[in-house]
Image (cartoon, rainbow, N blue to C red; front, side):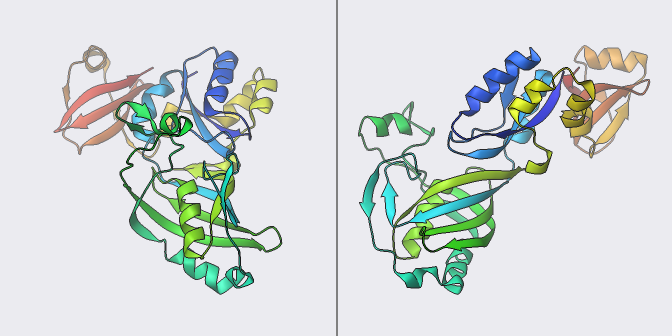
Length: 290
C-alpha cells in the first residue's frame, strides 16, 4: 500500500510508537510528517510505503489545535508533564471573557517565538531537551511563526483553566504560546492539554484510532475508506497522459518537454495512474513512481 492514513493519536504514547505499530500492521515502510508530544492527542498523518516520498510536500502544513492553558503555575517543561518551578496568584479579574479575548487577539499575525528548552531543536549538534535534562542552559534563537486565528472556547475559573483554539504556521510551539499568554494575563501558566485538530487538509474527523485500524486491517472496505492514495492526495493537481514511448523515457529518468506551467502532475498511461512527475522550465521529470 502506498499513501497516507490519518491516525488519531492517543495520549501517553510517542509518534515513534505509532509508526512502529503501523509498520507491523502494514508490513511497509512508515513515516510521519511531524511529531506530537506524548501528552498530545489528535491528527497524526502516517505515510505508508511510497507515500513516505511525499513528506517533502507535507512538512510545511499549517495546523489547528485545541488547547487547555492552566494558570498559576510554571513547569520546567512548559506542560503538565514537568515539575512546578514557579507559582503565582491568579486574580479573579483575569477570567473576564473580554480581557482574555483581547489578550488572545494580541497574538495574531507574524512574530518571533522562542522555542521551549524541552524540544527537539538542535543547537551545536545536540537536541535542546538533552541540554535541559542535564540542567545546562544554551542560547535559543527565536523563530518566525504566524498565528492566523485564536478563539476562546471555555473558561474554567475553578480549575484556573482557559480553553482555546489556535490556527498557526509550521514551527509554532503551543507550550511557548501558553506561557506567553499567561504572562500577558499577568500570571504564569503551562499547557495542560493539547489536541491537534487539523494538519493541512487532514482533519480529526477523518482520523482513525490505531486500535480500530489494527482490528479491521483485513477489512478491505474499512481500509480503503480511511486510506488516501497518492492519486487522491494529488487530485487537485493537473494530469499528464503518456504514450508507450514517452512512458518508458519517463521511467528511465529522461526529461520530457511539456509546454505547461511548473508544478506537480499526476502521470497516467492508458488511464492507469503511474505516479507523480514535476514540470520545471517546461521539462517533465519523474518524482514518485508506483
